[in-house]
Amino acid sequence: MNYSRTMNDTLLALCAQHGDRKTFSQGQLIHQRGDARPGLNIVQTGQVKVGNYGLDGQYQLTSYLQRGDSFGEVTLLVEQPRTHHSEAHTDVVLTHLNHQAFNWMNANVPEFNTYLLTSLAIKLNMALEMMDDHRRLPTHVRLAKILYKQCTQPTLNTIKIRQSDCAELLAVTLLSSHKALSKLTMLNLVSTSYGAILVHDKLQLEQWLNDHLSLLPVQQN
Image 1 (tube, one colour):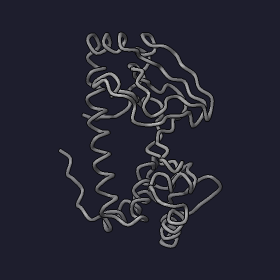
Image 2 (cartoon, rainbow, N blue to C red; image 1 turned 90 degrees about the vertical axis):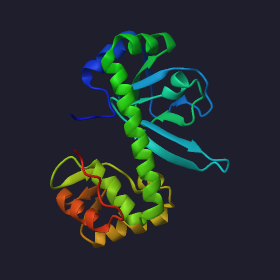
Image 3 (spheres, rainbow, N blue to C red; image 1 turned 120 degrees about the vertical axis):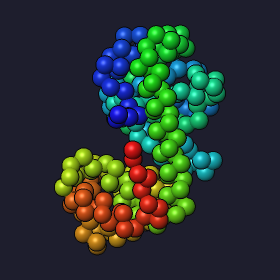
Image 4 (tube, rainbow, N blue to C red; image 1 turned 135 degrees about the horizontal axis):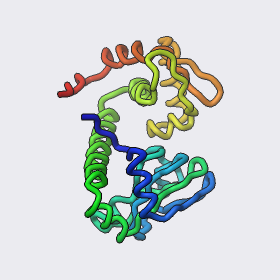
């Protein structure tokens, strides 16, 4: 069975029927850290940027959310305020499920409950893997993993990502991110173009990663 952290089109449409449609322009605030208003937001179109501003004003990116991703579960399941700042990275359309709509979906749509459990389990696993990578792996290997996960083709892949985005995802300075990218470029694994990074061969990058990871991959059943 294939598991995904994102909703399929059928479930997205059903949520849209029972939720409220919210639109946000690029750069517009969706939620602030500490916002206690309950509700589950589901991305229908566009991209949401999630992260936090430190006391020094420096922004730390956590992730980008796209169609089928959801956020705000903590406000409903454990009645806690939101832990992250979220804004529209592009023009965005969201479906907002309030407490009543969320409870109805949870009680009457088994696929919705399955999605929630699966999505949260995958997010937890990703967070634990990210923490372990940060402790074990050099920056250029972590960058290679990020790029590999963005690949959709077996050979050449053009990934729309800026070096500043890489720095935020890696939680390092722009200079450190540039050095990491330069190492991968010198190895002929990637090259750069305007606003994008080109992965020359996904299979070659996969083999290189297998040779440079400090843990063996977990075997899938």
